Image 1 (tube, rainbow, N blue to C red):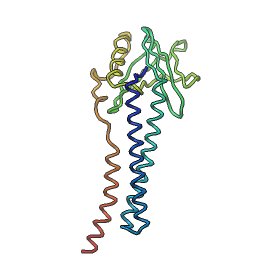
Image 2 (cartoon, rainbow, N blue to C red; image 1 turned 45 degrees about the horizontal axis):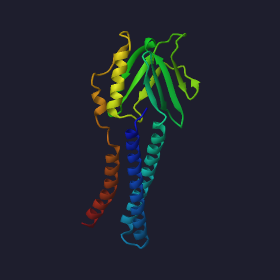
Image 3 (cartoon, rainbow, N blue to C red; image 1 turned 90 degrees about the vertical axis):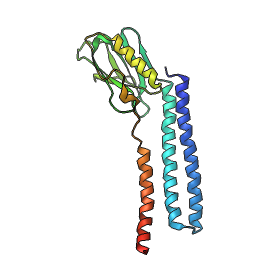
Image 4 (cartoon, rainbow, N blue to C red; image 1 turned 180 degrees about the horizontal axis):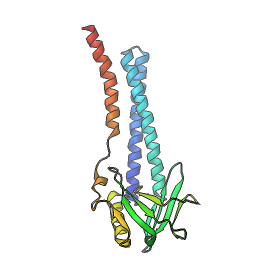
Length: 214
């Protein structure tokens, strides 16, 4: 199960987004008031739109983090000596779960997306297999299950993954690196590009206006 410390970290992320939404909303209100007073009308219009967009974005991210807090309490990973058992949120409030026996695994593939700890378990096609994959209570015919690190610390998830690699029989192919370095790399910061786009949208018209005056 996810530890309380990991859940508290998710709660801190949610709170930071809420604080950011409050700050942006207050800044948008101030800009809107100055715009109504005809003070730097176009500048205030721009900042009202930007801060309004940022407040909505922060609220959406806070809602997403809040769902992760609730979902983390229902997640679990388990190795019982014979099988891997997982329960984790999927999408739209649904949960996916599995119990996959080691002797029915074909391969384990380490995820290669930077900053995202995850791995895939692939089972055989045998008609009489005991392993199963569920979406809510409905059994799925697919053979691939993606195990994600939702609600777990990075190091704990790594240790779980390495223990699984140790437990499975030698016939199971393991595809990936020994130290999972790609999981430690930082994700690409999309927020930096958004901020840069806002800055350019403000500076370019200003620069064109200055050049026109000159």
